[in-house]
Length: 178
Image 1: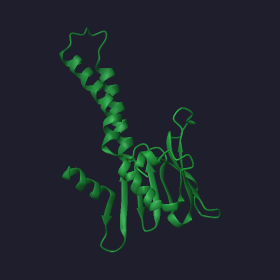
Image 2: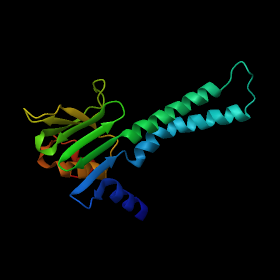
Image 3: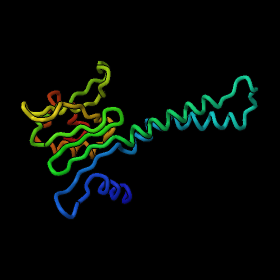
Image 4: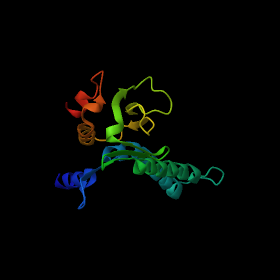
């Protein structure tokens, strides 16, 4: 447990010598296990059956094993690229496919929690935090995928955003313990 606590401190907050703390949120361990576990197990199974199995040369299993490995690597790259940073009054969100989006904390009008499990529009995560800038701010609205964050990181992120977080249907109260 001590290893988990020290890892969380190192992961979430880094005190710089020249200024305020920097908060760094990444995908939690459960996301790696849940999303990467299945492709990893399939790739190991197909590798084992290919190496030990008695397959004829007309139907090799290597392409299936390589495909499973490719999916596993893609999932790891996606999770590794996920990052939310709050530093010097700037909120930055980075993901693999959308790049980095940033906004000053003072320019955020609201950060609205939206949970849609069955009716999720395409290209939007089911657990989303819509960050909307103030009118006239030099930033575009963007969506943060909350599903990859652990409860403690979500709680800390909501605390840092303060009263700008809107949860109209009160769905996140039970999740983060508010």
